[in-house]
Image (cartoon, rainbow, N blue to C red):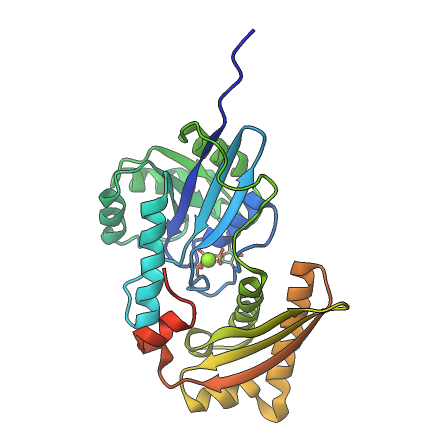
Length: 296
Ligand SMILES: Nc1nc2c(ncn2[C@@H]2O[C@H](COP(=O)(O)OP(=O)(O)OP(=O)(O)O)[C@@H](O)[C@H]2O)c(=O)[nH]1
Ligand SMILES: [Mg+2]
């Protein structure tokens, strides 16, 4: 009789440029929408933990903000999350949009610092021919010694199983870090604030989503519903009016869509009390950025 395989566990950091599909990929692996994902770049601002378990393994995924050259304190905090995830990881997934021809050299310099196995994930293969995807991989392979290359469409669930096997094959034997039925470690109020932020990205334009953040002031599980009191915080007074909109129409819509998506996420009725507050230049203030939950 053959020996049973030892249980394996470890951390996998998902890194790459904004909009490469990191959050969509993690959601697809987990089979649930845990990390907000939109068509706009820089949607993710934190390190989002997503846990994939089966009988023989547990992979703790760390979704991260897209790698950028930070210009203000919020972006600096976002890059600290990326660095922390890379430090904590056993395996790094470097995800690239197959159509993105501008991968900066500093991305490879960063990867080299950690001396960890890096899997190249060529994503969005549904948008190009196979030939084009292969060529893209060859160009990137000439710049860094990847442990493996996997082709995926996070959106259409292609290549996901292959990627998972590649990650697990690189993990060491070890017990699970979390109970096997756990999907994440963030409190429900965090997800509520993220889902409101997702609606800010979907419903507002230009600087607004990038200037705003959301703070849940009160979260109360009542008998019949969850009561949530949340604040949308903006950078400048003029942005407050834009969030509210003519006759309060915009914020009404924001509240309605946010409530529905939170209800879908928690599977319970929600009462959402939403307000707007101005905190002058919060984005540029290290202390305020930290106090608003962006600390690693
Ligand atoms: N066609 C196609 N689109 C994809 C694929 N994966 C992700 N997308 C889309 O790309 C956009 C960005 O996806 P996200 O998952 O938010 O990307 P991200 O890398 O997490 O972005 P940031 O959090 O901003 O760094 C969304 O509109 C996704 O639907 C894919 O495989 N194919
Ligand atoms: Mg993301």
